[in-house]
Amino acid sequence: MLKYRKWESLGKMLQLIIVRIMFFWILAITVYAGVKAQPVSQVVNHFDLILHFGAFGLLSALWVIGFPREQWLFGLVGLLMLGGAIELWQGWMLTGRQASFVDMAANGGGVILGAGVAWFGLRLLPCEK
Image (tube, rainbow, N blue to C red; front, side, top):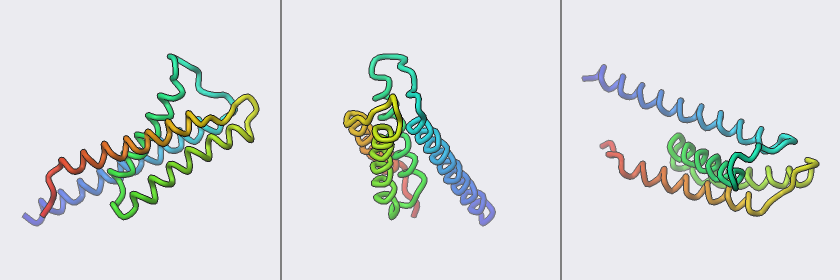
């Protein structure tokens, strides 16, 4: 029975490591796409907003799933600040790109919805005793 618990604990630790790697990988891609001089090409109407909402929603969901509850607020506020900082960077430092309050709102909406969906999903999982 003890060996089973060790393997179960190792599996959970491996899952957390994978979620955290995914978080930092998607974070790097999001920051790179946000600060490069050329915007991502528009595939469909409002594709930019879909990307903002989806990227920040996924990032916040991974944060809630992969980090302890005590760090949730810090991480989610950090994601909101990052979304605003990327938009300000685009407006001030990059020629050919501009800051957009609509993009900031999409970032914020993604953070809120992603965190809410992840929190709700975690509540549905059976708790350990």
